[in-house]
Amino acid sequence: MNHLLSIRDLRREDVLSLFRLTATLKARQKSGDRTAPLAGKSIALIFEKQSLRTRVTFEVGMTQLGGAAIYLPAQEIGLGERESIPDVARNLSRWVDLIAARTLAHATVATLAAHATVPVINALSDLEHPCQALADFFTLWERGVDLGRTRLAWIGDGNNVCHSLLLLAALLATPMAVATPPGYAPAPEIQAAVRALGGHLKLTTDPREAAEGADVLYTDVWVSMGQEAERATRLEAFRRYQVNERLVGLAKPGALVMHCLPARRGEEITEAVLDGPQSIVLEQSENRLHAQKAVILHLTGSGDV
Ligand code: CP
Ligand code: NVA
Image 1 (tube, rainbow, N blue to C red):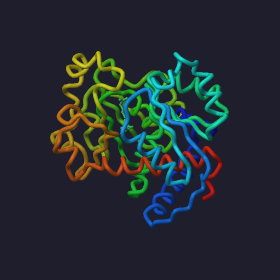
Image 2: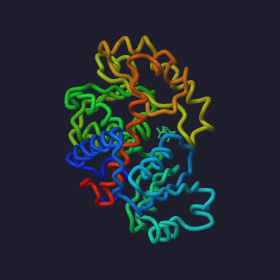
Image 3: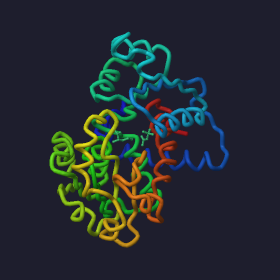
Image 4: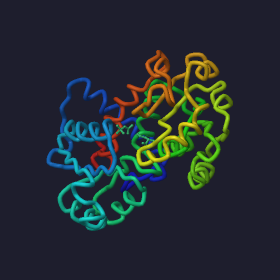
């Protein structure tokens, strides 16, 4: 694994080794151990879109590993305008040890990777959010959930976060049902990749059908960053896809509720469900920190900590 642009860059054994490393790093942090395996190393963080969790967890994560992070809003470096994307990648590679980039188009982060001589991490593109999916499945794994048996239901937009979860579910043999409005299903290339991995994927337009008997319900915003102009159409299209107490009532008793955050309370999820006893959204958020530290160590060849 040279870059982490997609879950497709990982094999099942990479994922399981990342989970073990994530658990070690989390326990170490909680015990006050301040080992600094990345002393003197740096990561450049390019962001074309807003962020709370991803930026903070990369910066804090790199600090906890003894290294440094430099935040580069895309408009400040003039990515693709003041300087071409390949030139930005070539220059950064002479100074830093890693690049993480949050881009509108997946092609932008892929171009960075094609021209960088250091590892590049996709920090969310229109196609995928691999760091999110790793932290989410780690969250289930550390709770002792049997990933080969647990039924995961996605309710909402079949885009970036859903794509990475689908690919990771396929790698880990987790059965997944996806309920989206017509026209918002996962991209055909992702569906094909999931099938090629032997994944159990059920697609429906009925949120109740996906939720029935599920062990885990997962949702995300109806209007992703970069889609603001489609807001009115999307609110109408997704109206029946809210994760509320009624929908949760169709899942298994005690089913877990997940969300990558940020959430639009009252749109894709109700306040009562988001803040309720079945919600594990803050565990997911916390685990972004440790999962990304594991990815960074893996990519820099420092995973034997
Ligand atoms: N879930 C996630 O990536 O959050 P941010 O957009 O705040 O980084
Ligand atoms: N689908 C959302 C995820 C944010 C973490 C977006 O792309 O805005």
